[in-house]
Length: 543
Ligand code: G16
Image (cartoon, rainbow, N blue to C red; front, side, top):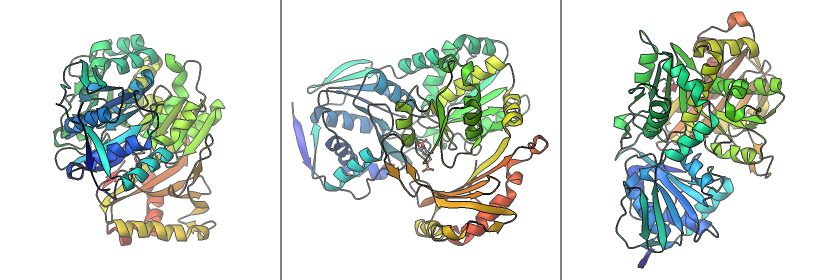
């Protein structure tokens, strides 16, 4: 066995963001860049030697190259066995599923999620812990600390292994098991949902379109929807994972999933449309000429959970990220279950799920999930909706509108100012921060500020504290404005402005969202001086 120790120097930019280390592909292609980060992961861990690791990615450009490198480094660092998805493919939820199923010490997931791919696109590396979830801050901080002091890494000198053929391979003293990327995950879905009821729905003329956006969910959606649930061939569109996602932006929202939106808002639209993102953890749900906001989706799944066999006994609680609307809180209140508000980032849900405090979690950023894995899960959310529809016999629109009648409607929108200059974006946040104490009591267009703070969170399970998680202004009527800088972008800064207003009056629940939020949008511009700091009049993406 020939293990090479390679001398290296630290890079100063390997601090993981909201979800792992995300950078442009050329950054990862610099000599030693990927290797430094991977070695830093191993250097930050104890007692993994001889144990199992899960490895896979969303199939984007550089996935295969990185997998071969990581396998050889894992072998050189004493890992016992690596389970790698066939073709190097594993969706993020499927990786989480395998980590849990095979009690791995962790997983390395290669993805930049919804960011575009290709030679000039983005790449990313994420480490997940034995519970199957994204590494919490103490783990990512330890990795970052190691990355700042690294002086060498270890790699086995060996040939590449054949990622396309399932089976076992030897790399030095380590075993590589190339596994079916889909099967365990599809089995898990079948164990949660009422596949018979969904199959009956699909065979009864209920038309579904699933757009995989040429990203990782293609093979998963085909196996589950077209094979196991027998939806007609062609139900899954753009189902072939491509290294550059066909040149698209694999983000399931109204802007980037345009083809699907055109179908669902066109003549003779199908009854149900859905999309998922690059690595399969996000979801968008559409009905015939109807869009479900992710915040509403979480609330509706919670309210209807007992219709799903996997949650038939009820759910213990829900958690949502702070900028996500409070729609789910109202359901939790009515059900008398736990309700938590966490910072943005799926990693903050892990402890609550592990402790059994919550069953469902969700974020405004098109992510919903449950305790079945420790990641958000796009196809799971889609199947959840189909299960509810099959049981209730109503359309997407009817289900949402009935929900609003029962709980009130939360008008909600997120405005993104993407790729703006970093320094002025930080100044915008700083100036808001410096004025926080002056806001309460002030009136803006008839809205009186009740509370203004920079959100901080104390994890109720391990007591860890996360500060500066977004500036929020809560108004007397419960409306909210939240300002954050994204932690997942790779170019400049992205300002996110989150807007929310509650409407309990049924006669006022059918307004256009942007119209209903017009005053709050204006207030956001005035308070944060968005034009002055970003140079922009308008957001680049509205969801
Ligand atoms: C990641 C995180 C999510 C977060 C989203 C947006 O999603 O896992 O928790 O809500 O980024 O984060 P930000 O607002 O900081 O850009 P994904 O799908 O990109 O892994």
